[in-house]
Length: 179
Image (tube, rainbow, N blue to C red; front, side):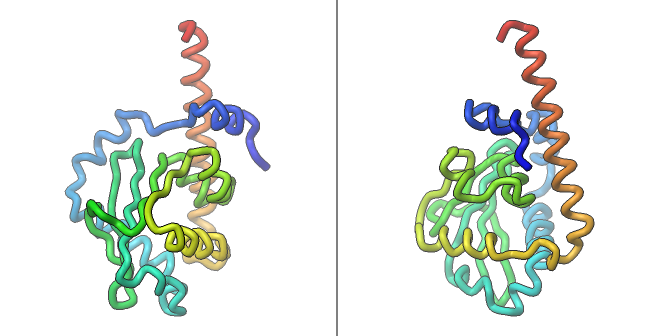
């Protein structure tokens, strides 16, 4: 079920964003540690898909992932049947950009990629066919088959609820200030 306040917020373009103070510590993480952690998480999460060759479309292709409000950006490619994460490249084949909230909506399946794209919450640029293959891969995932699903799913929903709650407080304070 979709939260009506979230729909109202997204229709007005006022989506919850990671508070700047939360993003600050991310800047202190050495880039190599961040990319190693992301690569480990993605390779673990998609281990079965990697074994089945379902991510072959990323071989010799580079996709940038940009999480604006977290100040996080990295490139993703497939090499030797493993997802490799490195710093962003200037000329990726595909670039996907959004906020933490947008990616939480996508990962939790509260919203699909098409909806996020048409609401301009998720931005893509580059190779349209590659973007469609990434979308189809994500749409075809059965969350309950992913490792740690019983841990990840509640965490995603709690994160969304927290973001909605913080955003509700922010909007209430803005109304009190007359803004």
